[in-house]
Structure formats: C-alpha cells, structure tokens
Length: 296
Image (cartoon, rainbow, N blue to C red; front, side, top):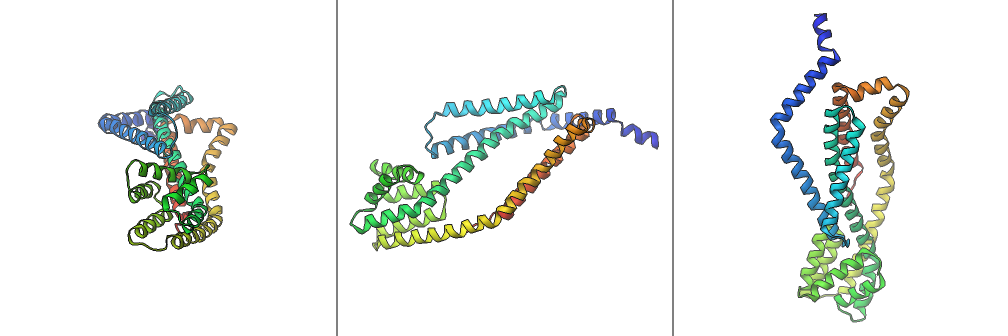
C-alpha cells in the first residue's frame, strides 16, 4: 500500500498522468476550444471597434485591428518565453495571455466609454442651465443646443449635441436624433432629458422649466452618488489589496525560497494550483465589486 501511494505521489508519475489528461481533454475538446477562442477574440474586436466609433476617436479600423493583434501576440510570446523550457505550460499560458489581452482591451475600452458617459451626465447640469436660459429668451431646442456647443467646446456633451445636430441637418427628425443619443449613452439622466424634450415638443409645455427641473434632479443625484463613492472607497481598496496579496506572496517566495517557488511553477500540481488561485481571485473580485457597487 505504501509502495502504491509513493508511486502515485511521485512527481514524474504525476507529470505523466496530468500530461495525459491534458492531452485527452484537448483532443476531445479541440474544436470547441478553437471556436471559443475565435468567438471571444472576434467579439472583443467587434466591441472595441464599436466603442472607438462611439467615442469619435479619429483612427482607421485597420489600425485598431493591427494594434489588437500586435498586443495579443506580443503578450503571448512574452509569457511563452517566461515559461521556457516548460513548453506545454508556455503554450497554455501564452494562449491564455493572448485571449486575456483582447478581453483586457475590451474591458479598458468599455471602462473608458463608461467614464465618457459619466462625464456627459456631469456636464448636463451646466448644459441644461445654458439651454434653459436660451429657451427663456425665445430660442428653439436646437438653437439652445448650439449655445451649449459654443460654451462647452471641450467636452463630450458638446460632441454628443453636435452629433444630434448633424443628424438633424441630414434629414433626421430631432426626436429620432435624441432617441439615438439615448441608446448610445444608456444613462437614466440622459433618458429623462430625451423623454421630457420629445414629449414637450409634441404636446407643448414649458420646456425651460422642465430643463431647470432636470438640471436640479441631476445635481441632487450626483451629490448622492459622490457620497456613496466616498463610503464604499475603503471596500474597493480592500478588494484590490486582497486580490494582489497572492501574487505578492508568490514573488516573495520566489525571492526567498526559490526551490519552493519552482515546485509551484514547474510541476503540473503547481500549475493546477495557480489556475485555481487565479479563478478564485477573479470570482472574489467580481463578488466584491458587486457588493460595493450601489446604483442610484
């Protein structure tokens, strides 16, 4: 019994067994794995191109695609070199690095778009005030928007209003142009402004008073959101620190006790442990993010 146990716990035997299991898994699931990588990469590429277009970044589609492929291949190759001479480990982690680079760029672009939408909402307080004053002196909604563009030249709100005006000049109605803006921004405050303006243009009413009310509502909402951010800032920092602790411990182990670190990085059992640790860190980070995120 002891001989059997020592045989199965031998690192060489474990390496052969793990290698065989990995081979069988990839052999059976190879079409599905290729399809998964293809779907993830091309869906990420499609969303990145969409966000670049929505953010009005002046660049070509070919440059964005070239940049994405260059980043993914470079990261994958660097990971492969870092894992050398472990060929299987290098190929596996290199492929994951390539995939995560695309997903990472997608997440960064999505985050930048969310920040842009938040900037639009933050500027709406000043923008609605300018529009209110313009409507009070007899200007139409589109003319009041032109005043906002002139007074807020540097900012996403001016760009969004300019896009709405450009669409109306090409023959689209004001209501349709505002509805497109609402679909692009996906913010409650933008929806409130668009719905109010469209209804008042059809039924009539005091647009200036409505815009002033919207501006005051957005201002109060921002106060509440800033207070929530201040209260949840500690939880966010704690989540980041807890997520980084395992990686810092691995670096310290590699610097102080290299033999133990090589067992983690150079054996199948260590690779499996690293994947488990990475998965648990991701799950914990997502759960912490959901806990500290409070929508107003």
